[in-house]
Length: 83
Image 1 (cartoon, rainbow, N blue to C red):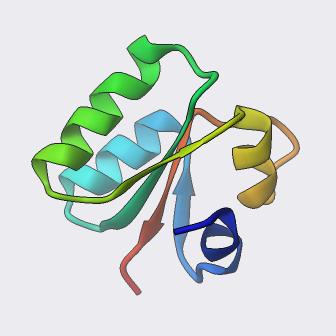
Image 2: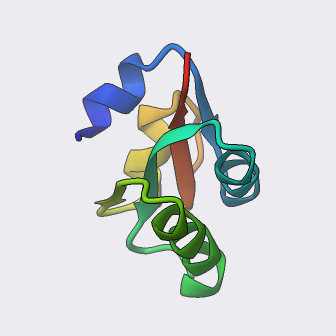
């Protein structure tokens, strides 16, 4: 899974908190996390995704992840949601 899939996804969430909520609600399909984000922020998201058996894609920088989501700032996490 690449950032292109995230860019083109019809539904997605951005941010660690929103991503964690989407995972908990069973709406997330694929989770993206930034390697340069603080582990205390991304670790709960990764753990929740792994518990649900969701694929986790690591992205080099939060800035890249933010751009893929169409925002002007970096993002620690994002997810593609079920349609």
